[in-house]
Length: 176
Image (cartoon, rainbow, N blue to C red; front, side, top):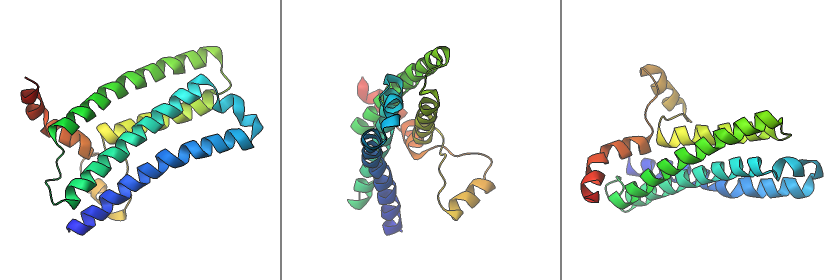
């Protein structure tokens, strides 16, 4: 059982970590190879949405890495209060960045920007990643997970959301 959990956590960490590395390579390659993409990919709004997405993927990768490391060391899989505080800080920062992204979206619509569709795609991808990581689990990869989703009454909270809720009292007590 432990090996199966380790394998799943490693796959999650590797998948998000791979995206963190691969997406910028693809982005830069597109700018260099496809001249027509430059105005779209180099605009400030598109760069903001892309950076937001990368930041969220990096947080997800870090979370899965820390969980993997804890399980591999035979520790309790719960994260330490210091790490929980870091993810609470990330959650607040993400809320501000997503809010700023919405203001950029309004600006993009008003100015009928060339890169509006790219911005919408990246921004929605980032918002979905934020929801998936900090609120509701949206990704179901295996048939067993999909069957479990169908049997329950609605979407489940993400593991990080559960962990943040569980540790709320511990974190508040340790801040005093």
